[in-house]
Length: 113
Ligand code: 5GP
Ligand code: ZN
Figure 1 (cartoon, rainbow, N blue to C red):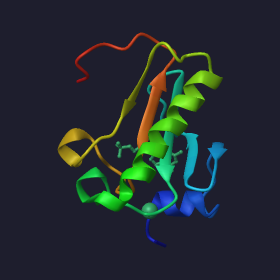
Figure 2 (figure 1 turned 135 degrees about the vertical axis):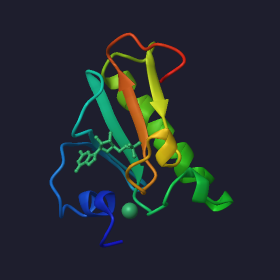
Figure 3 (figure 1 turned 180 degrees about the vertical axis):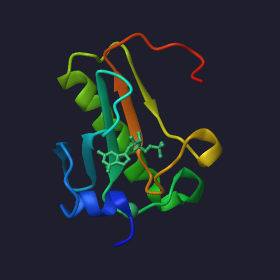
């Protein structure tokens, strides 16, 4: 989608600090990090959000989480990190291309705000 920020990042049209890419997923540093590790993992397929996801998206959404777990291992934070998927503006979703936040490298309180 040409009017989607994350589709344009995946396509290389908008610069981002890419940290990982495979056939299905793409990961890059969040521009406004909320923790020492704050990476966004996105499906290469445009999915607007979890609310809009369909059964056929189950594999790719799972892959996004597994990519996050792999990055956490690589960064040595595998015993303390959080994956977050904001759904809807009221929960903080501001970009409407499904993305998993990987947050870690500091203490994380529960519940999140
Ligand atoms: P949301 O608020 O939708 O859950 O998460 C969107 C995230 O995308 C935010 O954490 C925000 O900082 C990040 N973001 C927004 N625009 C850009 C951008 O142009 N580049 C990068 N790398 N991150 C962005
Ligand atoms: Zn998109």
